[in-house]
View (cartoon, rainbow over the protein chains, first blue to last red):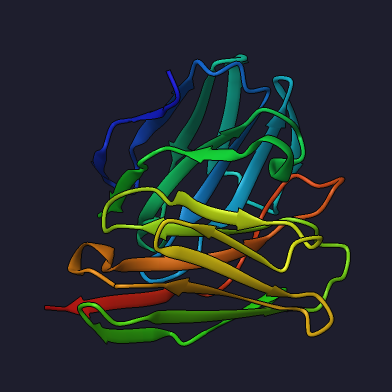
Length: 115
Length: 112
């Protein structure tokens, strides 16, 4: 299995809702990442987990809450989002903490719309 | 500050032509330079990558040219096909490190 699987593929939520995005990989990768991508823009790093521990939080608002329950699973909990948070949310994983060493695999993303 | 600068923003090429996308960087600590291809509604997929000890790398119709002294690298797509129509991102990373620094992207359209 060489894929990063993200669910759901599409999500529409109201500003008062609580929802979660899920990311799963079975490649034995020990670094996992959340990115946010707006239309026609490059991905922006949000969080990095290394060996199930949060190692980087790129000043992301607290309405985004990441969780790494085990080495294969990464969640992003969403609460009280704003319309400007609408974007494609990408999960990625890499075998080593240095992405250039062993490559970096992106999931297909969750298209989030906040109404 | 944009760590990796990419041009052009958009590119239209005839089928069978050569598509060329350029990137430049400032940080000499970067030691891995991938190109990602992204189709609408999909995540970026690694296309080809190069390290600074090599000046050129070719995989099929895709070639990276790397100029270490100029701190520039480029992607050449030979015999461009309509199926190549996508957004292309160059990127750079360093060791130790944990992320890619992406260029701003190039929207490529190949017309039949």
